[in-house]
Image 1 (tube, one colour):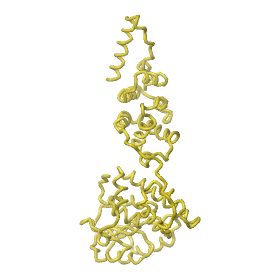
Image 2 (tube, helix red, strand yellow):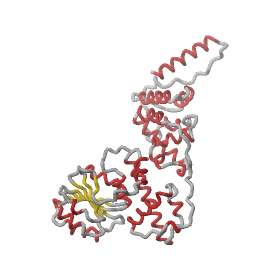
Image 3 (cartoon, one colour):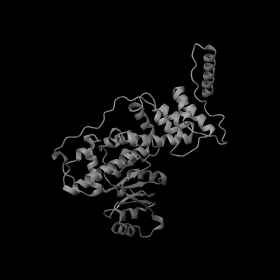
Image 4 (cartoon, helix red, strand yellow):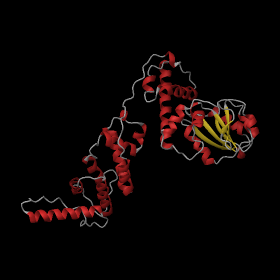
Length: 376
């Protein structure tokens, strides 16, 4: 994943999410880049504080820590903090924060709860030089964008909540293999680390637990790439594309077992379309689905003449048979913006017998003309 933001790295994912540590960043950092770290603070309430406008920063944090009624912990983004203020904040216990300072505070990097990062050198001053970041690298490398990466982090948070609930109920992790079935066993300890840090709960030694890791629900073979078809569909007409994507998710919810889908296929319509074309629509998009699409029932939008032409171009590029295209529009009541029906698709004309060659020739020439109009 090419995020374009320096902070979206395996190191920050490990520190902020899995280890739940505090970070001090210097020198000056663009605030929009600093807020990109919110990606790794899933499960926390974010509070922004500008220290230059406050004279009692430490007291404010202590008050918030002791008087918050939220079920989620609070994480503070604190800007323009002086070196002396950093020293005071480092004395506080139970505070989660990301601090930005313009001061040279590297001599304060002598503890483990606050990790110091020099943005200019792109280096941590007091961080394990060889941490195990295999899981973090895997999560970032397999995410096409920040939205998908965040979905994966949220999924880990959900798994941790299930683990915490099970420990509260019977102090055991009997169902751990089921909860973490979507992850390779080598990554389980990282998820358990997050559970321990976030919920402040002791985790039993999993080496002593008796369970078998349940196999993944589905093993994928090599899938044919249908992204070029998806691009044809969504690039022609925004209104038509929006209806298609909504119908795609409706089809998934009604006809597809979610256990058979990867996380990206659940939320990414292009990935979902490729899955459906490989498993449900191997011979082309189902005509029943196409009928729903051209009727625009979800948006209740009345197709204009231009919309109708866009539909025809899309179907032609998808190489749908002419007979299917004619059937689809023959069953669809459409009007252009002026109510003129003269440009609607021609009704299906019965194929004449080849023994009446003059009629057969006329029919062929009309069909060729129809095809040329579609191509244009």
